[in-house]
Amino acid sequence: MNALYKLFNTFALTVISVAANAQTLSVRTIEANVGEQATLTVSLSNVEAATALQFNLSLPANVTVNESGCALGNAAPSHTLSVNKMDNGDYLFIMYNMDFTALTDGTLLTIPVTIGNGATTGNGKLYTIRSANAEAVSKTSVDATFSVKVAGGQTGIKETGRDGTSQKAFDLQGHRLSRPSRGINIVDGRKLIVK
Figure (cartoon, rainbow, N blue to C red):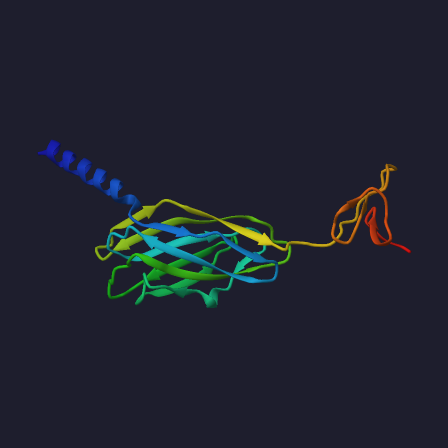
């Protein structure tokens, strides 16, 4: 009897671990200029009757979530959303439904983000993804990584040090010149007008 009990438990654990990656979340790359807002769209696929889902979101430095603007999509039409910023700067998203309505394939969530000053291109990640079904069976899913491309970062001419070598001259379009020409030039980081 004891051997049969162990065999059953081993089989049950094997089935649970095979089904552990039941939910797949995906996020497309976003691109925005500094000071602009972009939208992360989180899609859900391969649903196995999950009624609740939670995940953590990490973003590159100076990219922030507009928590009040987050909205559930067609994959969670009757669910409730909770968004909280954690002490480490990441965000916790929880979607649940007290009627135990299952999530479906499709757009799970839209998350507005703001590209702040000093933000640079980097990766974001959805991690610690957990789902539960109506019987309270919890499953863990694989992390989802995505890119945040920051266009129009810091612009302008950066101050350079003088090292005693030949002058570096550029026109206003940023083309390098062999020597300053008529008009406005940038020479060693300083504006130079040649008449």
